[in-house]
Image (cartoon, rainbow, N blue to C red; front, top):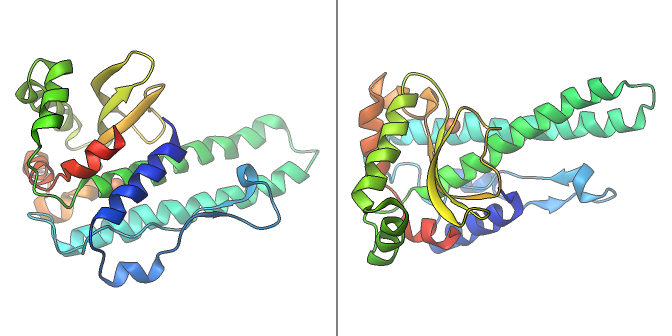
Length: 233
Ligand SMILES: [Fe+2]
């Protein structure tokens, strides 16, 4: 996945919707840190929710705010810590490369969490009604919109009680829309642009639905912002 492209697309989607609420207070744009090349010193700040946390149908304000604040912002902060440690490690010529790579592994994992959470929150805030154009495009790859939805839900239900992500993505290499199962933040399919992202970690629904993952998936579908999803295509 191209994280820069995904981020631009998320920001474009976020710009479409009204923004409000206390989460805005922490919002700033991501900019390369002064005094260092971006690849080593990129300063990624939390992106606000593109809607009030209490706006979603069937996903409580408490749940959405907690998810954004603790899991997403927590990942942003952790990524910043890892980046700082990487800068220190780069300056330490005695550090074995395999120890350095332990930090690179953390960077990969935290980056996946940050990007996927931004795409997840940006996938929501709509009325769940897919327009004719996106339904037709999905049907072009899956045979029908209903076949796509059935598989997407099935993958989600398979992750219920565990953790992972479900992604409708466009595989740039295969020129194909597919649904992907992802076990964690670092198992993204190659050359694939994520279009619709569903968080299946228990923290995404346990507060509202306990272990009833299928009810959370219903709520997710009722809140999909298809206009934002289409902009990622
Ligand atoms: Fe999450």
